[in-house]
Length: 443
Ligand SMILES: *[C@@H]1O[C@H](CO)[C@@H](O)[C@H](O)[C@H]1NC(C)=O
Ligand SMILES: *[C@@H]1O[C@H](CO)[C@@H](O)[C@H](O)[C@H]1NC(C)=O
Ligand SMILES: *[C@@H]1O[C@H](CO)[C@@H](O)[C@H](O)[C@H]1NC(C)=O
Ligand SMILES: *[C@@H]1O[C@H](CO)[C@@H](O)[C@H](O)[C@H]1NC(C)=O
Ligand SMILES: *[C@@H]1O[C@H](CO)[C@@H](O)[C@H](O)[C@H]1NC(C)=O
Ligand SMILES: *[C@@H]1O[C@H](CO)[C@@H](O)[C@H](O)[C@H]1NC(C)=O
Image (cartoon, rainbow, N blue to C red):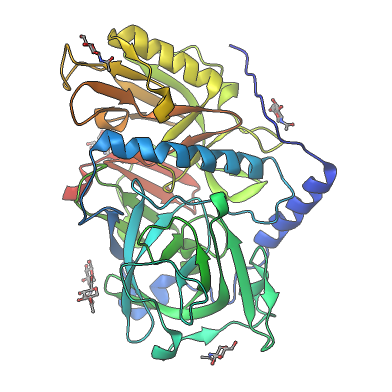
């Protein structure tokens, strides 16, 4: 199979220069508030926080219906990520987030005394932010909006600080305080002042975390009070804590069970297989995986590995992203996967493409427990056999079942449906990622 990328993005030397400038910015010396979490007396073992679906506690729509809604949003996200990877001259280098059904939130608290809130966990972006008073424009959230004047530990950040310089689009207000603007896909953004605060994760409080105090916020963040960026850039939570490891385990899609994010030495597990964490100099914030092949049933598919390789121009490759629902495979590879599934599952194909799902089967004759072939991703150094529910989901009436991956042009993405019930361990020091199949709600 020859790799054929079709993309519509223009590429100019001016764009290259701009992106290189950002890349340099992002590898500049670490922010002044950087510290090792373990320096903190209460934090000898790192910490853990609860993770839950955005829908937790509410009425959950049936799984497949829920996923269909996520599809359109996921497509917009990957288009945008790809255009960033191709060095567009767009100054915002962060990933968009779609915070509706299908995303995961973490529980944390801000300020002194601490105010509890929930934020979206996003490995595809860096900034930590929450909606703040005084609100110029805030969307509804499930907890009271944070008011800095109620906290003893809130501090403004000066324009001259390294935190301010690490922002993609800093500006300076009349009081020489740093202001930020951070745009996501689909018109979503947050704007406000950069500040530092004490954040509480589980039973551990950490002072002086740099965050965006957003007075003007717009987008589909559902009821989340903000985002916790877990990317590789210096403003992300893991970078600020200077912790070498973190892990999460996402519970079943559509379940009301919660799970855990571990940061620090609590994320130490006995691991047998690891795969390298690749870096794309064009988007240093993203975690890239090295995917080498796919097996369905007993068949190793004839996919040219160049379909998954990261190109010198920043195109291609596969990122792992907790903020996108589905997995997207480069179209040439996706078509091979799709044809093999049709061949092995041997059920009538139903055209539901208008819903955004590329491959669905009519299961009325066999029921929802029909036999599906195993699905294995061969990452460099680690094979991952997906649990069945991570790639085939039946609708609530039991008449159709769909394959929960989709086709993309220009890059591939490992989404959160495919990460359910897998402990995902990021070793930032060794630059490896590991996958350990786990019942996440039992962890
Ligand atoms: C905040 O969250 C913690 C831990 O989840 C809980 O023990 C505490 O009661 C919560 N506080 C409020 C005011 O809800
Ligand atoms: C932060 O700066 C704003 C003005 O930009 C000011 O009103 C506020 O009092 C400052 N907060 C602190 C804690 O210094
Ligand atoms: C904090 O929580 C962790 C696990 O949740 C526990 O192991 C540790 O003992 C707790 N520390 C304190 C001081 O309560
Ligand atoms: C690692 O390998 C050992 C021995 O082969 C096995 O007992 C253990 O379950 C494996 N651990 C994981 C996390 O796969
Ligand atoms: C980027 O490189 C790939 C080969 O690695 C090529 O197929 C693609 O057309 C290139 N894209 C651009 C926009 O130059
Ligand atoms: C599925 O197949 C049955 C016959 O076995 C048919 O009656 C039904 O209309 C089909 N459903 C869809 C969605 O195509």
